[in-house]
Amino acid sequence: MAGEETGGIGDMAGKMGKELGKAFTDNFNPAVILETLKQVDDGAAKVLGTFGASREAVAAIRQNLANAIPDVTELGGGFQNIVEIQQSVSATLGKNLVLSTEAFKDMYATMKASGQDAGTITKSFKDVGISVYDATKQMGDVVNIARASGVNASAVSGQVLQNMEALNKYNFEGGVQGLAKMAAQATSLRIDMKDSLAFAEKVFDPEGAINMAASMQRLGVAQSDLLDPLRMMDLAQNDPGELQNQIAKMSQQFVQLKKDGTGFEIMPGAKRQMREIEKEMGLPLGQLSKMALASADLDDKMKKIKFPAATDEQKTMIANMAEMKGGQYVVNFTDKDGKAQEKAVSELNPDDMLALVEASKPKSMEELAKGQLNTSERIAGILEGMSKRLPAAIAGSRGGKAVTEAPRELAEGLGTITKGVTSKKIGKGLDETTDIAFEALNKVASGTGSMADVTTALSKISENTKTAFGSTWTEAMGNAKVATDNLSKSQNGIIQLLNTGMGTLGKSLGLTSEAAKSTTATGSQKLKVDDFIIETHKQDELKLVGGTDLYGGKSSGGKSSSEPTVIKLDFSVDVKGGNITEHQFMEVLNKTGIKESLTKTVTMELNKNSPESSPQKIMNNNFKK
Image (cartoon, rainbow, N blue to C red; front, side, top):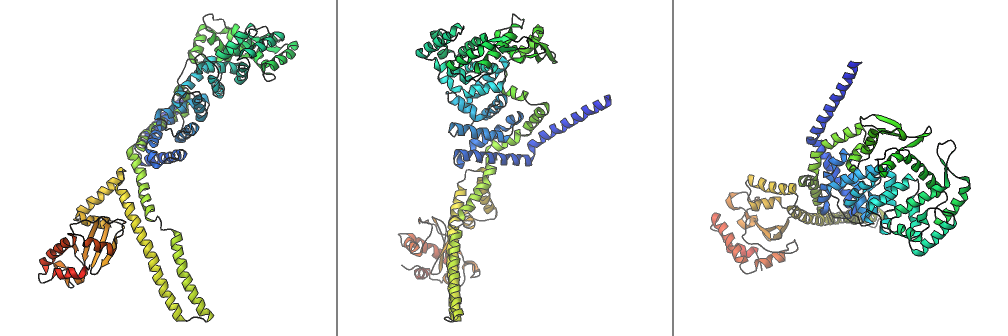
């Protein structure tokens, strides 16, 4: 058996070692990194959809979402929880608030410890002027007050959030803490805190307090604070929690111990009287009875705790944790040695008292959230959090943003090229050509036409098709120039690297900067003017290409006439609109100095190879005014 136990421990240790190693290596695993990048990009897109914001706002969202991954994962959450928190908070506030990295962890821990959702927490606290960043700390106080009172933290948190607007109507000692104490007592008494606050509203002003005090006296209420209108009005305005406590004490006069000593019951003759009191107070039927029984039970348990050094809060905590069993109140707890104990409250010793008090000490929301995980969940959370640290850091960095945004920008460029070149336009052109064909064929079939009509129709179709697709191609090439210009202005590091790489590649191939521009330019246009072809690649760049007629069938350098020589011009021209017409080009040439400079350039080129040529004559023949 010992060997089996040793083997089991060894297997567990081996498994832990493998999982720890995997958690470490996953930080450098390209697949994990890419998956995290995609996850963060998807999450940021969802948040942008909630915001209705443009893509430019994505940087801060990505960074904060990504950086929160390791901490939230360690608490047992996931990236989806982070996205949901961000969406919920911003939607609740109605603002495009991007939460800080720490706020995600704090909010998730608060949700786990309190059992409440991010939207409810945010709204309730914002309605009383408390920011979302302070709300998590305030909720920590609420949960710790519930723990110190020995009552359910989720139930108390729910009562606090549902009645948070009471802070705007009444004064509570300590603000949220005072409200939390009232909620803890209401939970202990098994009543809805709303009913106590409704009673406070009835006696908030002098007239209401005087009428209520008179009714209490008439119905035989013995609690002095509820018979004094000034005291009752003061409690309603400045201490609703104590007003609730006075109602609970008043209700005890209608309760008695059962004959078998196993609990309390409403006295038979008091039930009608309690119904009348509930009616005057505006309480739901049976609410006062529940309060009376719970209050008497709590008071009896506290009397049985025999530690004079214990505070009322500590006694209340133990009393709320105890329950009747076998004719006595018992409490289950963990002692100072970590052992589970079940003891009657009357048998608790000083060490037991210390263990109970120690367990109720305030803890952070993060500690409480971690404590709610079982061992395997906690280990898995730690290892998963470790494996996400580097991938999350990369996903939230500028480099990570560049990786995911670069393909997007390139795709946007492709979309720009086809912008305006719609299926509707192409389809319309095809329909027109099809109509021509069917019309000619129908004439032949009906005997009103001949094959000559068909031949004419086919010729027209060919011409229309070339025109339609030619204009479509020209439009696409113009759009391509816009797309290229946009990419050249990109702030994305990877796109900038690609732009730089293209320039470096051109230099390494021996291309001049002008040639490189000509090679990589998109959306180029050509315009033939007599024996010259004008190529435009940018709005302010012209190239003049000589045809065979210019050099008598032979270009400079003795090359074949099919290889025209590119003559570089040393002037730039500003032509608006992107498309250079023949008329515009001739106007440019006739401007002062341009034609003379062009003549000089051509003369110099021709004199290098053909002194017998007449450059002035050639220029005059090819550039007509």
